[in-house]
Length: 375
Image 1: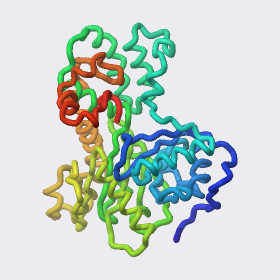
Image 2 (image 1 turned 120 degrees about the vertical axis):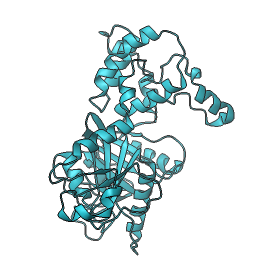
Image 3 (image 1 turned 60 degrees about the horizontal axis):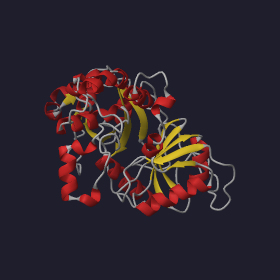
Image 4 (image 1 turned 90 degrees about the horizontal axis):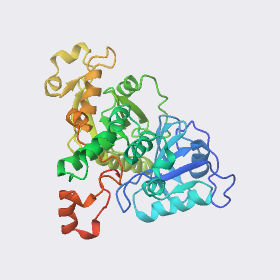
């Protein structure tokens, strides 16, 4: 693609070559949707070279061709972790799964089912009971530090709870607490020069090399996992929409906007002289950056913001971390001493969920027997 500084190699379409040393699974619910997400863990660089013809820089969010299957975004969250974001059609995901499996990748069709087939007490014989063993198994994959204390407290809480029914609020709280295990997606969007990259780097604690072959939309994109006061999130810096005649850039815009719609938390960023974008969905936070800029004192936008920050001085950054954390995992949820249904086998009688029962009665074909611990 024009402007790329990344090495390009021919995309293989027939010869599998060396087996790919990655584990892959679909991280979004099964069924058609605007954008799917496939998680990849392992030798990600070799997999991206084989599938896309070239790698993606760590911290990058780039448009790529997935062999002859589809075009989509690739988020490189860490050296051994990446996410493929193709269009969400069921057949497209099936074709990518077939391609990955044919090239030696370990495709896990349903990680929850795979975990359910293992006896937690055999994996953790030191556990006092089954709930503690499940908590230790969940702790091994939990992304957020805040999950540790809560998970280790579950065995006595479930013991005290006994066979009492779960309330509708118990299920809702358990679903929110799963954000401590599976990182929620936070999207940041704003006009160029509003300070998005500077803010992202300030929260990351380091400068990421923001490189991309595309002008405009993906040039300033960044993706990474960030610890926000104990809650780890998947952070996406998404530039705003602009008019373009470039077909590949239009595809990137389309996929970026789909990611924006599907995000768990959206931050709209403004700065002195740079207003908030008109978005398809209402943002969860209207943020004003560059609060240390002398011109911001008389800026009308500042008075309309939910929060003002400065990436240069650090003003407001701790408040921003806490605000996002408390929105996604409220303090009252973390402080609640009732048990948390952190595993799909808890509580023992899932049919006790009143909201689920009503939904199943209205739409029996869409019944999900494990709504709490699976996204």
